[in-house]
Image (cartoon, rainbow, N blue to C red):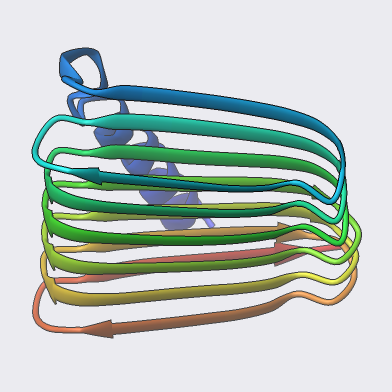
Length: 165
């Protein structure tokens, strides 16, 4: 158990050093209500995007190409979905969901990428797919359905999945 806690703490420390303060382009989207959708696409290096949605039936998608990009998706409510894609080196993606029918899909291609998914609620599905070397994935799920699927292709990759009631 100590090694799991150490891995999660290490992931948090790496996330802090991921170059968020250096972001060249920054996108912030906040939506509240019913049935909204967002999409953010960034090409280049040192970009940052934060999407926050609260309500029912929200959908969010983020795509980034380059290195040291930061992508954060937060959803609160019911029947929400998040899809993120990053291609490049040293990118960081985090998805947080709280609600009922939670689904998150994170895909990264490259080296040194970090992906984190945290879900609290009922339906729980988390998919993390990484291809490359020295990538890290952490999935934390609390409550009901809990279907974590992590696939890593390459060398030196690390994955941590924590599920609880």
